[in-house]
Image (cartoon, rainbow, N blue to C red):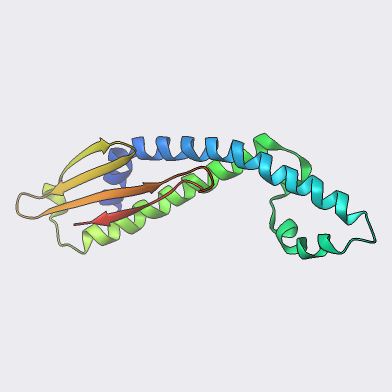
Length: 151
């Protein structure tokens, strides 16, 4: 299975690069919103007559320390690290799902292509063919994320 995992990593490297870059861009924009929340929370926290800050306590505590410190670059790097880890895990899961299809890994031919922001990988051993493709979602308020589908 390591062979299949390594093949998939090589053939889908462009997905990793694209996904991490999208995540970095999202993190830069999301940081500003999170930082504004931190500053507002701290301002309200210092006002003993206001209890509204208590309702946001859990949200504040779950924030990464780099956001609380005001380290934008640290937050962007943290999100990029999470995106890389997600990519690695999704490739491992994909390899397991493809291996379950019973392809002869010694005769494996792999072709990858981009379709817009998504990627499609076709694996064949001459007898069986498996098509794996991503569905990538990103938006103004949605963190970039994707999943692999197999046919």
